[in-house]
Length: 402
Image (tube, rainbow, N blue to C red):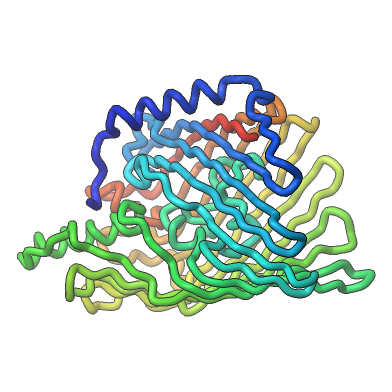
């Protein structure tokens, strides 16, 4: 089923049991599985509130349905062969509501530094942070910059089933380069935000045209995905850079009726990060060339543009303050013209301030506030009566990891 239902009693009991276990001292979690096996996990609970628009759900009254639970295991069976995976429970309001799924699941053989192979469900290399997206404790923000790491397309860019070649190439005194080449397919969840948005398109078309479409039979499929990445590790301490590329082709159907198509001809992300003493500066720039259709009519054919700057300062090891400026344009050469009647402001400019405090080695608290101009990224789905150009949102998050 495409639409959400109240959580069953068993699921609520499961949540309570997990929370009680997490409140135990971290030493309780220490399980000796030998030198070759590692078990880790995390639990996050957040709060999201907006004004003027809804974002990722019914957020204008405040939203606590904002949590994740993950458990992963890595087994280094030989010096060259590793298997591992992570189970993820994710509940973000109207999407991913209470399902446990595989976040990643791989078998990996490392021939030598220049060459390794992975097979399975593999985290997708996109920008600096996509592969770390579920590791909340590795970054200062609750939400990664949305211009590149759009939360409503999380399932599109998170991982794929297929294969990957990877390796490390030394550059002498200049440092070294990690590379990845991958290909396969994406397995979409029926309750992901992007899939729900397609279902809304089908319902709206059905109401206007009277086609009697069975929305519960909607399927969203990925025909192919391919891409590559270069990560440069400079010999200058604190400096790294990346260049990533991917392409994919999606289609959504109800039986033999094509509802939407989405062909990403290329998504290119150029990234730079530099840390110096108590300061850190990150900048990323992306262009996505894609073509979208709805019921055979082209609704988008062009290139979007996105970039952000993130400046962080840590006066002490446990505390980090961050300032973010983030921009996205649906069409880079037609930035401020209205597009249709349901997305009047097809851009997103985000100015945000954030705080991170590491309470202990296992517990982290974060808070942030965003001031937004624009309504890109499925705002019409959450605001069917029309979205406001200027809006704001704030978020709080508590994370436990072991």
